[in-house]
Amino acid sequence: MLHKPLPVGVENFEKMIDSGYYYIDKTLFIKELIDKKGEVNLFTRPRRFGKTLNLSMLQHFFDITKKSSSHIFDGLQIMSAGDKYTSEMNRYPVISLSLKVAEKSQYETSFNSLKAEIASEFIRNEFLLESASVPQARKAIFKKLMYGEAEDDAYSGSLKFLSECLEAHYGKKVIILIDEYDVPLEKAYFHGYYPQMLEFIRSFLHSGLKTNDSLHFAVMTGCLRVSKESIFTGLNNPKIMTILSNAYGEYFGLTEGEVAAAFNYYGLESKLEEAHSWYNGYVFGNVNVYNPWSIIRYMGDMCSNINRFPRPYWINTSSNDIIRELIDVAGADVKSEIEALIRGESITKPVTEDTTYGEIFKKPGSIWSFLLFTGYLKKTGEFFRDNQIYLKMEIPNTEVWTIYRDKIMEWFEDKIKAADLSALYAAIMASDAETFEEELSELLAGAISYHDSHENFYHGFMTGALSPMKGCIVKSNRESGEGRGDIFIMPERLKKPAVILELKASKTAAGMEGDCLAALRQIDEKGYTHELNRMGYKNVLKYGISFYRKNCVIAAGGGCPLS
Image 1 (cartoon, rainbow, N blue to C red):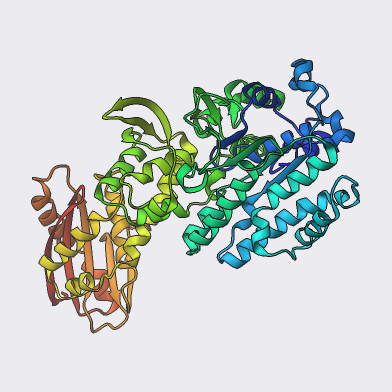
Image 2 (image 1 turned 45 degrees about the horizontal axis):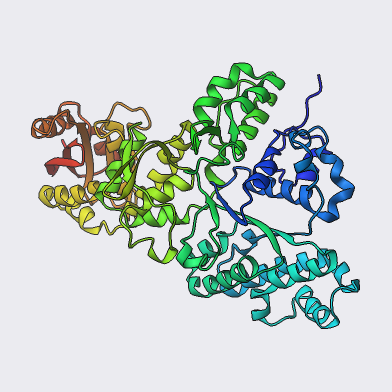
């Protein structure tokens, strides 16, 4: 049996259907939009959860210029929903824009990208220049906007202007679709031009969605809900559907039934349990959903080789700037709670559904809201206390857990690598165990580990911290599987002392002192210094180090000629 190709990265609805890709029918999203009659509808979901494809579907269904391709809906669920819905097909002029183009590091280039995106929609509707219903004065403005030659202020009102031209021509109000509405603001915040971009986006949306008598309804998508006071000022009760809203839960992401049907179609039933562990676990409203990007990539790999291992496909598809910066300023409480999450535990935190970028670091606990709404956490429970909603949250699935283990822990490690460790290095080479212990304890406090009692964590941590020592080679014998001292520090100049560190993970705080002395004795008892002697080092400094959670005890020895 020849199976339909999997739609990896396909976000154009017409291409999806006409090219014969496997499509999971989400067309009843159209029915729900019509039934609920929201004038301005905002859907926030994590990246790569089908938002762009759904907007493309809406455009092809409603757009009056798409009548020739109406066949693409044949056999889909919306066509059986009734005349109330099919009578709306290809009935309205539609404006469709993606603000994702504004992923730039400077305001000028970002704004120029937005101008080009707006101009492309004017080009798509260039026939209006021949319309007898559009006044000549408007056609002159239209041309300037189309060619990117208008004054900057004109682009703030371009959404409303194009809507009015389309209504004048068709005699019908306009549907506006805006994808990734929050991307320009996110990029602007992290590149230092937030006030300028905020002013433009606020004016652009206000004129297009608030003071626009030519608007039938609008649908916007994004990852985060930006504060109403920041950007949606004056809009008439926009309907905002976050992942905590009960409505529309099944239309972004893939439901259990949809994934099971797809796996059955491709003969992958034996892989369903593994896929459930890796890519399921998100909760949108009351619906459990899979990550569609990862599921499609996983299915593609399994169809090629059913014995392949699952992978974290989603790891590099999202913008992580916000989360990384929040982690950079995180305190000890955030570190300990992330460690608890990686251990498979839950945390309970107050969560707000909207944000103002300028206040991210002023609000305690902002990191948890961002982790939730960007797909790094899922809600498992909620309660109301002190006029505040509290959510119980945990990591959604194995894929996201690996991102925590690899990516987020890497960010914490980068903080350590960027720290000034000169005092630590000086103490080591001076055989100053007291200062060494003090500096190492400070460094440990900023580290993250979900296995505090695991000796391999401390070994990797120490190797990473010592590797930047100038003029020295740091050798990790444990990683090479050698039965020798845990870590060797070998100066390039043989006249300088070499260092051996033997590490122990203590089971209790009370056992740290004894374990540290035992580690120091082990260096002598097992003759770990002999290798350094053969290499030509005249002096060796020996350290026994015991760890318990984020604490350490250090005993020093050596400094005498090797025997």
